[in-house]
Image 1 (cartoon, rainbow, N blue to C red):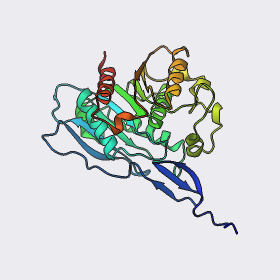
Image 2 (image 1 turned 90 degrees about the horizontal axis):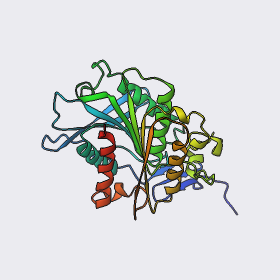
Image 3 (image 1 turned 45 degrees about the vertical axis):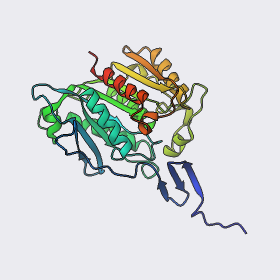
Image 4 (image 1 turned 30 degrees about the horizontal axis):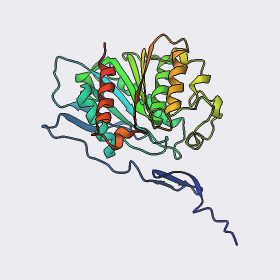
Length: 306
């Protein structure tokens, strides 16, 4: 006879990374390791962990070049990790190593955001946490914020947001909010969306989105489908880089986003970069390969262009 016990019934899974059960239990198989921040003075990049909001327990890992010219302010990058809104962490090896490489190449200050994850904290909480980080950044505009690395080294007139996969979606939606709500003392220059997670041109909305955002309207939800967002023309930065990969199942979604933004009437510049022969977020899992190194160089070049 069939059991009525739902304890082992799967509500949603994204293998090999994540599984959730109908009884509320969640298993995460990626992003659960924690690499300690780097305090080695001989390392080219230093890092440390900070609490952004004691109330929500939102935190972040900060990165900066170990040797910083005291007379030169550096661009500041706010980074959102991927993981279908349900898994991933700025503290795991893949993201710690990626941000370390990007900071070394671009010579920037970076904040890798530990936003709260679905299903325990469904969308829009990840967006709210990410916006809270930008407001925290803005609190340093008078040079008297809570974090000395930002007070002493960051140029808040050259701020960028970036992310991969679901994190690229979060970066886009954070830039959209920046177009609606002014952050005094902060100027958002650009957004880097790497292998972004959006609806497709054919109208397909990823299953992961419905799980992470149970109150969504689906294809008519501008958070996952910017093509229906009348505010797109007001995105709060002047440059956007969209990175896609030839063998990525999300490639067409990134291309559709690029085409949508390009014809939206927005006054900024959108660029697209395709990596041949590679799949989704290949650079996280094979960071030393030539194409991953090239991708990091391209992101650095985008941040540092005048």
